[in-house]
Image (cartoon, rainbow over all chains, first blue to last red; front, side, top):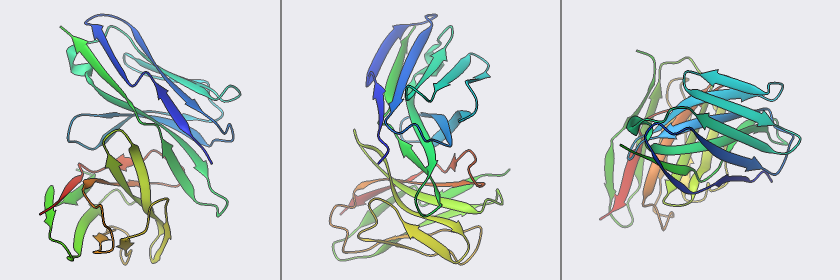
Length: 115
Length: 111
């Protein structure tokens, strides 16, 4: 069964700093990997989706990388801003034995960017 | 605007009562999902549906039921058999193997 781990559980950085969030998974037979952002009391907002054949995806100040062989993904946030403060969730997508697509989530990293 | 609408935002359940959470999408997605989120535990899959009139149990389906009579709608019923229903419930939809889009969630509490 796929397991997804995110380290650290919480991170506090000063504004303007570049930072990296880590995600690891146990089964490399994945279909894709998705990074989400969640603000308190809200649903999830998709940030980046990386297909298993891709190495990275970029959107603005965000860059996500995928290394399937080592079971790792990183989310790089450049020039962090207080508005980036949120919980970031990593989710690994794969197909079950029954042929249905499912996401397995990590517990998230809570990011605080201090002005 | 296309998106997913969950209602109500807050819901209270009395002991022995069944309650139903609504999820509607206008993204024309075939697949829909229900997750439960507890503090410190991440999201856990309750039920999912790949197509109308078909649904499958997820990891924690006990005490819950769903229906998928229309492509746009995937309601979740929390039955009295669910002894610890207090949680944040999230509904999502996607095209096959694509990015999942989430609603704003329903927070369920016990009276």
